[in-house]
Image (cartoon, rainbow, N blue to C red; front, side):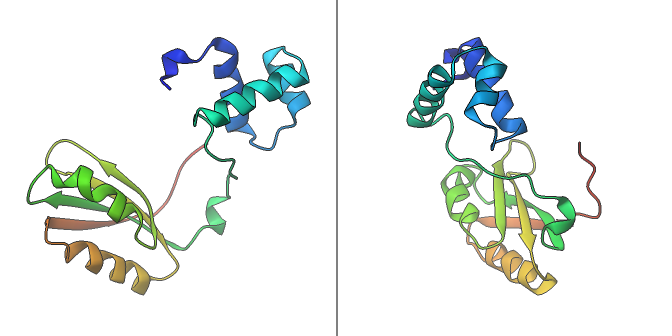
Length: 145
């Protein structure tokens, strides 16, 4: 489903859920100016369509694993990135794999408990036949709202 297929109430509902995925139906209904049952039907429809895939929590950064880094990865063939993205994302410690255009083919975000775990993960990526270059970019600080 494309964003253009969502009506204004769907968009407001999704914004409300992004702010607080544990909001009550009554609270959500108030946000979109619909009844509780109509809001429930809307949430159910968005879940069934795959627009809402899961409910999650926003964890305080200081509670996350101590070792966080990005790997800048270049492949021998630029087309390898879309084929390898799911395989790379499935590696232990990988939180996201972003396919890019330009001199860097993929940016891989990792969260590990130890530097040793990060090193093992880096070696696993570097040993893939399609990888031509990998640069480790440790996260020093994070600023976000």
